[in-house]
Image (cartoon, rainbow, N blue to C red; front, side, top):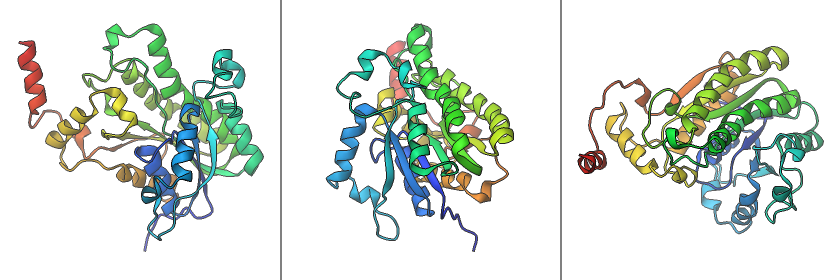
Length: 308
């Protein structure tokens, strides 16, 4: 029987702060396949996440098929806006939520992983990171600072993580990021430069697949996932509307689950996908294939009536 076997592999999933999003689901899927899992968490959410774990608040979500709980080998602080600690402004470094967590930069996390596991101690890196401070603004109304912040955290951080972490990985290692169809098509309400950031992420995936493949022998892919009404996605403000639109118009009409994306990530991380790199893999119930709407949801009709 052909199966996904990640026994003996170590994964880092960057961007996990609760049990509600794609990052957590990917971590769980990798663990189900036998990998040991470390996570990286945004410092302002670190204490909350650790408290959820310590108090058993997300034990139901952590339950694996064998009855055991998903365990995180390490939890690292990470603010992917900063390549080095010196890049962080002093008011950030000394703020209440940052000052006691250690080096929270990308290079600081890489140094911690090197100390903990040594060279060759990492096999899988998942980039589940995005931030668009002005995502609710139309692109034309987005400030330069908001636009560049979206690009920096949502796209460039993948390049920085490949540069810092690929040298720690065994040949055949896998990088995976998370994209969205707004990279190539207009999604009304997905603003603030985030559509541009996702387009950059996909372009960088192709370029990095060549450069990192030739230099370190690792693969780089991205998953273009359909919408999920997670806590993180609620920042967009329209995620429930996006889900309802997909439900009406995708070839498969059941809502996307986070674990479906997790399973795709586990496959891409495995030897079964050893020849796949530089790819954008759609996990969106087939919506990306559609060229015309099948049905218009009532909320869109109401908005059009208000604008008439």
